[in-house]
Image 1 (cartoon, one colour):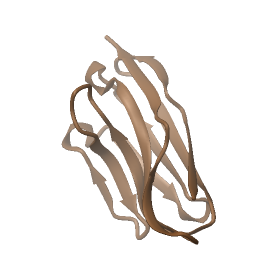
Image 2 (cartoon, rainbow, N blue to C red; image 1 turned 45 degrees about the vertical axis):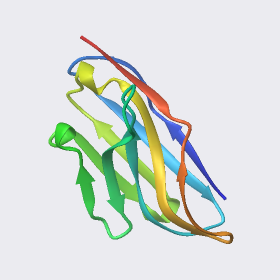
Image 3 (cartoon, helix red, strand yellow; image 1 turned 120 degrees about the horizontal axis):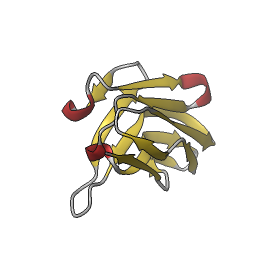
Image 4 (spheres, one colour; image 1 turned 90 degrees about the vertical axis):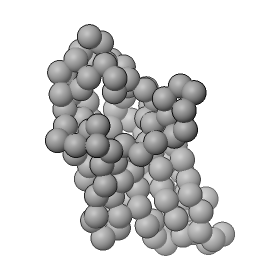
Length: 120
């Protein structure tokens, strides 16, 4: 099993910044990719940013140039620096550990979510 502990959400004014952190723990052999997703109301969960173990990063078009994702492989931790936040960034952000290999096999794991609210 993999446990994901998220932190860093909150309330910020438009143009402000927040930093999200997500640490994965458990009997982990490897994690193929970690990142952040959000789920707008009534819609499917969508990618915000992910980073593979080898360092390839993908961003949603809407956050390119504003958000920066980084990963500490040794500690299975990812950080999402969110700058120039906009009201439309308001959502619950979920940390995901994709294709995590543990003693019980390979699976995807999700955090409980951290809320980001951007006021105009």
